[in-house]
Image (cartoon, rainbow, N blue to C red):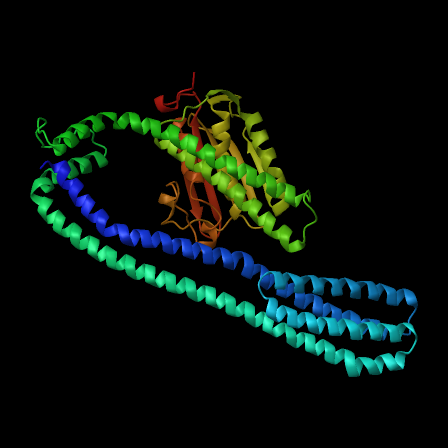
Length: 496
């Protein structure tokens, strides 16, 4: 029997052990899905209908009191109250019918009977008020109307009890299904482990040695060394020999696959951006009132969704950028770049933010700065922009931020200084690592930990350097130094 046949028989045995519990698990999942749908649709709708019913009942009581209190007031005042009174009466009747349709016919019909009686006595009360018999109306209200209201109020309690009982029953059913499924899954897992252990022992002598060697070779490849040779005879005729030959071919393709990975990430990020754009568009339409007016709470929630969508889009772009830099897939579009125009445009984009946050923003370009340097303006804008974004993010109101550009030792230096909280000295060496965030929990919650890592890779691709100085409680200074002569490393050569 070949190794392949042995493994297939072992897998077949495990499949047989797992087939029955797997089928039951699928059935249990369907049952749980059915219970969940019931909770999300019928029972949830019933709870909402009851809430609206109770609200209409409460408002009906309020407008009834107002109507009687205005009995001696002008007719126009009473008519306004009467209209609101009638509106809530219709709402109450509608919700009762809805609850009956949702499966709560028994208690709903009892409540409808109390509602019919309440409508009758309310009609009599209104007749007394309209005919001017205010004293009789007041007496009738105390004697008949208020007890009718109390009777209807009591009739609503069984509806709430019925809804609670049904929800509790559904939850209990879900718990039972989940408990049984978990028990069966645990038992099948133990049995599968036992079968796998027996079969694994039988197969150990045939496969463990070669697999251990392949594992060793794979560990070497994981360290970035692709010239490893597994100590398995290349002419071995079984499946492990085929695997060893495939491994040798794989190591020859890893470099090419690493290059293609960056391209794949680019496509994947595009597929993520498309639904994000759709979400952002619909949120904007809702905020603009295209689909109707919004309440304050609704607008607040939609604005939060919009902000988080923008944040997720930025994070996706940052992840794509950092991966491209690591894979060497970023090509700089370098060309002569007017320094002063670049700084002016960059500063203009942050002026509104400075005014909004009440931060003094100062820009200073030294006289000896060259008119142009060779750089990719879009990527350099991203790098310096990340430093400014961090400065504005962490600088409190009434603080100050400086953007300075000077020429030093054959380099053009872009310096961003702020009066924020500063960075602890023991964390400074790591702030340019991807996903590393300095400071306390509140400060870490303000970013993704990718901005400075991307800025470092952009600067290094230009042949420059980036560094930071900081003092806790006084602020931070970040410096980007680019060569004046415009030399760019091979990895950052301009695209053609």
